Image (cartoon, rainbow, N blue to C red; front, side, top):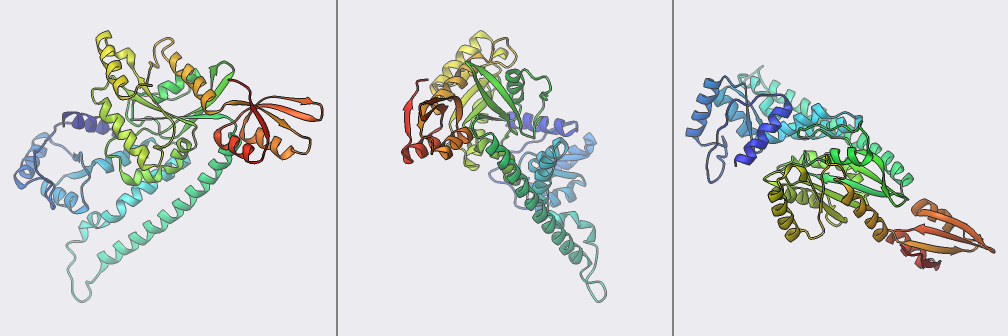
Length: 404
């Protein structure tokens, strides 16, 4: 509970507010009308008055009725965790795509809560000449919001088509996506591997929303396209996950996911489970994944030994890195080279003069390293993934292993 409250406080700080107090209650189930029990609600009202608070933030998602009833009882603006996260995303969105995705999530969150936003019409009485202005306004707002949601979804489909064209152009390159809990150090890993000071890094939750891709030289003549994706968090609003599917398509198309975990955080195991759950919700659980334990430099020698033992028991092939130590990412570079060799074996393809379409396919979907004539035939040394290799075998193409 304390860890959850500490994270909520960090979210509030990221949103630009100051925490002046906290309140907790042990309860079997939330009250359907006010979330808190009546006595605890009175205590909350008194505490808000004493502290001069202007906003109450709940760590769970409130129903529209609960939020409205609490606001009436405390005479103070109420926000739940989902609304807070949406507000942070709105301030952090930079690209047109991210702004559209956040707006979509906010509108879908707002739609069932419109009645709460029109409480000033409660004083309108029924009767002849006094019927329905509030209802009419609500219906008008609903239609406007539903129309805007439709427009945004259509625009995001166009964005996804454009991204698909870009991905097709990068088909031959090995693609890696960084995923993980917010503030796990994904951007720091990208910045260090790319040696690019322009990569934005900040010690705050959700510092990065827009996917950022850099070509990384990992050694032995290999390079990868490394993409930093939006961070996850526990109780991530469902609307937000849905609206960011286009952005996370980069992760869906990746040959390898690097799940970055901040092992210096006391709740790192819970963070790891949260990310695994979100990846499963996005249909990414079947992608090849490597666990990358980051921020090892923040641990004492004794703590490092304990963490390494614990992680090896859970995930034997995990990597231990530091984005800030000299050479702290070397093991990750070595692993990326090995992954390229495992997932895209090197083969030699012999093509006859009439197999121009196959040659074009190798250049489009594989990584051609060498091409030379052998009499009337063409010998092509190329790295191929399993899909391309299967197509070549099905077409009866002469293909032999060319080592590592």
